[in-house]
Amino acid sequence: MTKAEPNGGSDLPEHTVLQRLLGASTLWIGVVLVVLCVVFSIIRPDAFPTRFTLQTLLIETSVLLVLSVGMTFVIITSGIDLSVGMVLIFAGVLGAKTMEWLSPDENATGAGWGIIGVGLLISVAGGGIWGLLNGILVAKAKIPPLIVTLGSFGAALGAAQLITGGVDTRTVPDKLRNSLGFGTSLGGVPNLVLVAAAVTVLAAWVLHTTRFGRYTYAIGSNEEAARRSGIAVTRHLVLVYLMTGLLAGLAGFMNLAYFGTTTIGGHGTDNLDAIAGVVIGGTSLFGGIGTIVGTVIGVFIPSVLRKGFVIAGVPVFWQPIAVSAVLVGAVWFDQLRRRARDRK
Image 1 (cartoon, helix red, strand yellow):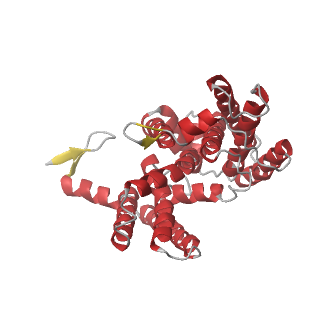
Image 2 (cartoon, rainbow, N blue to C red):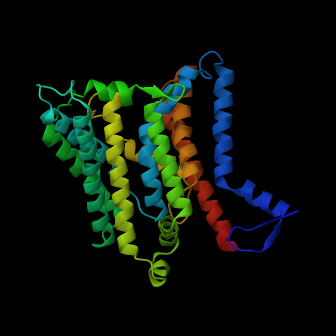
Image 3 (cartoon, rainbow, N blue to C red):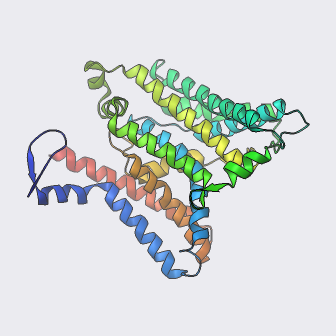
């Protein structure tokens, strides 16, 4: 029995296809996630494999997953975005203040869906502004993305603090919190999870089936070759960073709905968590390689570790050590894969 390669035509023996599948990093990362779930379920069968644990795990990971989806596109182009956590804060502040200013009473807790809709648009647009700025500076001004987004990291946080005076805004509409923040549908699935799932599915479709996705991989594999083949590299990079900013804005609004406050001091490591999830999921820091499915698995591995450690009573100090070890292991595996490919 043989199977045809998707790129065109030549038949491969079945065992070769199987070897390629088993060699895929996404498969092994999925195995690691399953093993972690099994281990924690054995350690605490009364607490870990429960519906409540699953729901809280999904909710707590939803915002980070939306950030990581955008980060996947950036890293595949061999770029980086250190600003997403602070852009999330800035977007949340803009959304909260907009709803507060538009509300007829002194606070926005009683605001209706019209005001909430405007707040959503402003949050997403606020994130998009930072993403567009990052993209222009990286693609047109040719400033290294590490420097550009590190600058945006501080500037976005500073702008959020200027708007709020450094004090969290807590006037979040009750309808927003009750519907998006804590609401459920489709048999008890949290609405935050549904939003994150919709974003993830759409991003997977764009990355793996459209011209935009193919161009993203091409630029990450070899930017100069992509430019010579007719791809508008500058325009594409601007769009990639713009998309990442828009998703950070959406994540900021989701965070606002869940916590009911702008949580200015609570996202200092979101950028690193997003990068870690993407890299653990098999996306290469050198560009040109990565999948959305891998990112989903990679984001959940640190989340499962943290949740499992808490349930198992492991001291919290071990959590960053374990996550760091997994991250370093993922990068090491990526380097081994690159060396093996270069030797062929």
